[in-house]
Length: 552
Image (cartoon, rainbow, N blue to C red):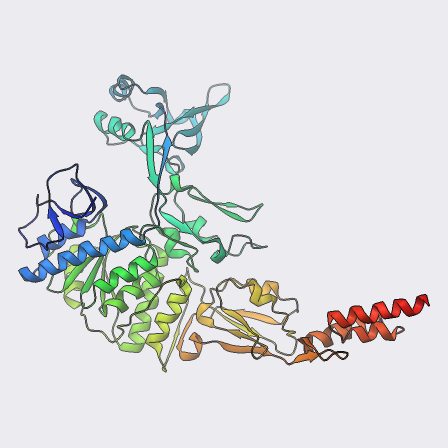
């Protein structure tokens, strides 16, 4: 497999680097190619768009085209998407209230078995491609019909949530046949998302704290197993929209094809350029737009995957303002853009992200965006979680300043924890409950510390606290001051020394709490009362000696 392939069809003449092979052989395999006519692991439509639209000089175009290839190769290197296959038969449920005899005959002539139904006869559909079940209504009964495909004209919203279910309104006979033929007898798919259960605020929790990903998923790719408190992921049903990625507060769900580390490494190649972010399918919509010198397109794999970290990484690694072209933006991305723009306006007096939904807005944004911004900052994101990357990048911009507070958006829950130090026993159950690192038990000074920038407001620490009215959560938003991004001491205590051996084994508050609770019960037994102030070893020794003395 060669690395970079270039098809010259439909592209302006351009100088290409030695690493890029001009090719018209559709059977030759490449890592990255500029055209779907070439076989490649990754198709990069932004290459043709850039060559045809840019005002850069010829030699600069050659250098930038190489950057575009290298960026997509980086995405391939860091991608965690894997290919899977599933056998799929030729049984079809065909639903239409109109006469579609020619379409049905075309399918039958190609070897497919077709059952025709009207909308009134279909109650529900569930399962996935190759294993679909359809609840069918008759005049007197209801029964289940199994199928590999569910083809429906003028589908209802619930009828397109599973893989194998397709809208055929507007498709002709050949297009319908092509649709199912390419998926049978073998259906090939990839995992579009990666999941880290250790960061999830739903998986394994005693109570439901978060299931935002399930709420925004338009398919059945994400479901809740409420009995076992587990997240069920069906990669075959995922439509790669990216909504779950942008709304996940911790990064437990990330894009498999374009994970955060890939985004930052790609952005490093764009240093000094003005990135034009667009979904890979959108470059054709803006083919008539002229790109100013220094603007370089940045392809987004999943339309709705943009979150704070995605945008922060690109703007800081490039040192430029960002232009985003997108007709539809999900709520989580809107909140992310607002947070970042609010921060850069407060700190630098300029916005970082320009959003355009049509050509006129795009032209205006491209002329406004500038490189050479003061927020340029490079971060090694290897092994860092989403919330850790957010904290480090925001902390750089805030520095030593104090620029006010950014309120939470509808999808956000940035928060602070407060503790009543008088009632806290430093049992540290709260720190054990926190899976983002916001709460930290520091053994060096026997303290409980808290970093607000790592808190996602899940409230699990408060629920895990053994002391009533000791911890409180405040959904304060993001405070643009240094202390918000550093660990602060919430509670501290001295260690208690065993009255027998002098060993330090627990905090004084914890020991005194237990002693106050139990001393009345042990009032008639001096030895038992003494054990309240002893380590485990000495406690056992005292009780064994007492038992031996009683037996003498």
